Image (cartoon, rainbow, N blue to C red; front, side, top):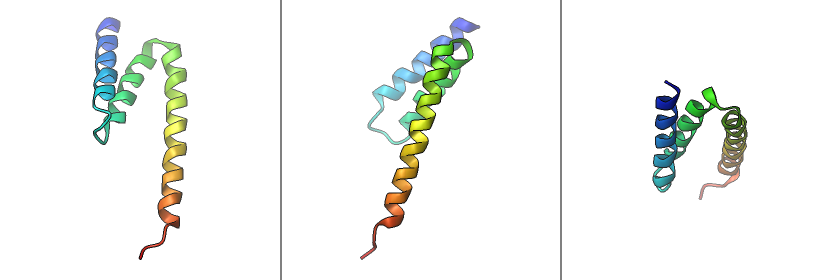
Length: 71
């Protein structure tokens, strides 16, 4: 089961990296990290860092969009 989960996770991460030009591809990478974090503690740490960075970036984009003026 661990091998199947790891293979699925690596496939999701690779697809997420390949499709970086498409919106939502980060969800594939995050899904792969979630699957890997079940079995590997290093993946859990990286997932945590990635979630914090994604949250921080989303807050910055929200503030930028709220502050801009419509013409």
